[in-house]
Length: 246
Length: 374
Image (cartoon, rainbow over all chains, first blue to last red; front, side):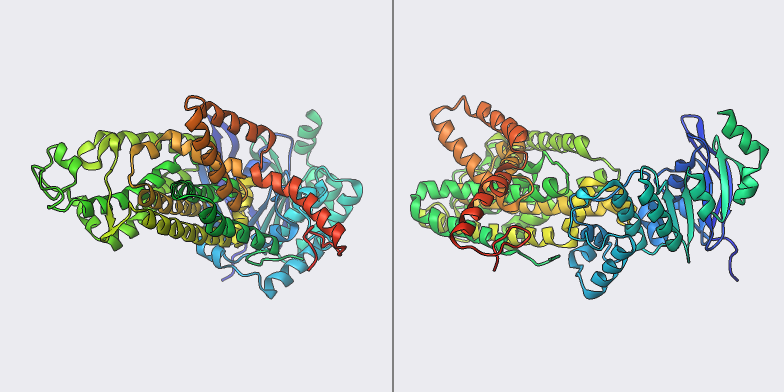
């Protein structure tokens, strides 16, 4: 029997000293769906991603990924289950080259002794070359990540996730801080990589959202305000009120 | 081109120069007394190399490496002490056959945990195993709870203090503040003669190179790059599917193993082990050796240990009160002006000039990484 949803978030709550950043939130993601989460600042968008990937511990609720409870797992176990996460500010290893950045994300040799014995074989090189081309960095493989532009760092981090080939990809504002040209290229890149996997994206750029979203969830004060297609959400009076009321 | 080679040509030259210094220049240029002193300095280099991996690469600053140096040293000293405490040698004691300090402290028999140290293989294994087990326990307790940075440094420093107090307090079992002294022979071989000291110097040098090669392997492996990645972006490593704590525990244990070997070689060459080598001050000094040498470079760490100790001996011979001030000033100067230590000065200032000179004399196409073309 195939499960209808790849990710089931139910009753998810986290409270920081009594403040409920995420408040009994439930939503479901289907395979191959691209879900965009939008909402005003402080709505709890990033916190939701933090809870799913294990960076923040939930107070109550459940997050099931392919019927496995993620809340009971360690961060690295969640990654191995098939969940990849991109952070809001580009998190790349500045002292290492682009090649090495991608290599460390290659899904092999994750234990201490595995890492000691890890060999840079032809398969690894080929896969890295492949990904580097996808993220427009094939000419910068030997460059230190510190010397990349902001947009290129974002691409590199996306590439680091791609090489893991996660079934669920979570992206936190992937086009924030990019130039118009970079933004266009990124949209094209994302459109390509969200095929064949489920994606959760946090984004503010409405044009971009309309372009990629299967469905949109609007968060407000840690709760779902509205959910559905972009069109439906845009015409929801509650959403209009929250956005215009601010 | 991306190379994952074990050693680049430049690094190989660096290793060879150090080998020439340790195995040829020092033995030829120095008298027996000085050579033994340099052997002693080199035992600290074991610790500094471990720190270059832990702190330099991995960003884990331990201010308690003296503990591991001491544990290794004590394990060796316990074996040597037992060998020196034959019933004939200790006939004047009220309980002959046990170490002298136990007798002075009214112990009537050897404590059970001293017994295994009658065996050389067990003692040698303990030189590495005891520091590693200790480091493993600290590592598991700290790193799985995500204690890091300054907090980790302070806690390791506290361990150094605790260890000193424990050793001094348990005089009957440990020799107390005097340490374990009057060590004589290793399997019947007198380690106090000039000849023995020279041989031990070479054994020490060889072991240091084994440690350096292991360190080089780790640095060049994916684990080495992971350490750097963890230092810069710990969360990114974690969310790339690595259990960060395990890697920190591993490198901390490796550093402890190196320190333990260094401690054992110290005991053999200097002929005693005491709590003054375990506590806070020596632990911080070891960090300074590593910082002066350049915390990113394993060879730099060896030079740092040699240079600072040589300066210490020379300066404290003439101005004993000034040495600690000088050491403090040195540390501040390195941190402020040469954050990458001697290795940084070499690779940023001296080496480019040498290469420029070299390339002028013999015009050759330079490779992109600045190394001379083959």
